[in-house]
View 1 (cartoon, rainbow, N blue to C red):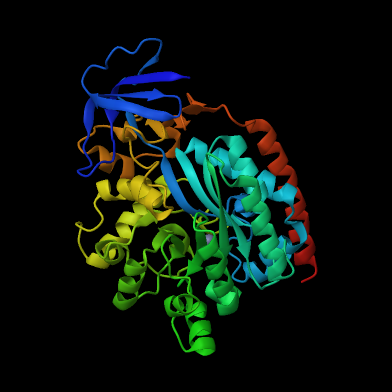
View 2: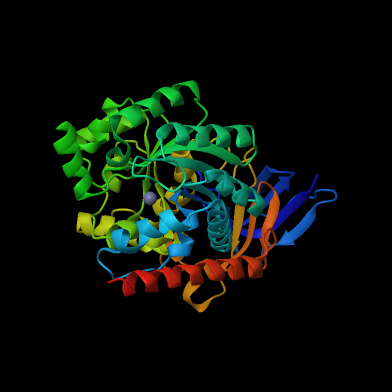
Length: 441
Ligand SMILES: [Zn+2]
């Protein structure tokens, strides 16, 4: 069993008071955090000793909503108003395959690791491939097979969709890092019948988390009102899906009554600040949700909507949008942003008992962040430095379940050059297809 002792660190355990332990040490045995403390590290026979040289050591970050394979669509048709119908949906139908999902997910996994993200909740198609890719990357994942009625690339009927879910569950149940999940796309793209079927299925599979997009768009509000005379949260509740462990992405259009209902039901929210802002959709009432007791994690959404898969580029918008709403500097202090990016994101995924903070007995998912870049100096409040100054390039080492998957900025679990080459090849086919679509008018 590997034994690692990291000393001389600026340790951020993400505890109740968001304490900073400086200098601090942490001892890892196998996949588990054995102990941590302040001052000089104890002697541990046979341990690999690492001097962190004052660097930050904190929990690995948790991204509770992404579509990793969509890295391959990043920046495509960026300023074209109808890009979704002109390019994306036709191209998804034509190109999404197990191979495309594998390559796109590996590219997303590489980017996530280099940015210090150690757990990702994903929802896309051919999700078994996503699980395999994240496993290969050494990451932790909640992998959600999408179900939708808009003729998605991997299932013609909902029965076929459920068969894919069953395959996913069969392959990954009991896996130490990959958790299978079921992902009805959204109220308007599944409707009550499918969501009710998912709710019944989830009742029989209590360990399988449910993910969906909720209360995201004006058109969704309109659809729910016209079809059911209800708002989206009520449609989900009618289907029996407003239940403990539901991972709801977005939640922009929710009122105080709905916040209460969601809090009581035990729903967690994945907040996608950048993706929401880029589409001009609005600002989620994060402060109100958290005040009501709803866990809210910081998510990236797909790289087509939010461009990057790192949480650092979300931190500014997450904090600033709440300050704008509150007309004050006070809302969403930096330390709360880091809590959301770690422990609270883990709670959204139902994993806070295992990951999200540095605590004896938890899984050793941790990252080391270098503070030597000029933009990181001086440090008065380490949380402000991380939220407003840090970038993915400052992440130096990444450990998941006691295994180093990146050291000195070099990802050890994946072949970087091959992934970039494979992604480039698929992007070339995408470009040719875009040219064909444009030539057709
Ligand atoms: Zn999404």
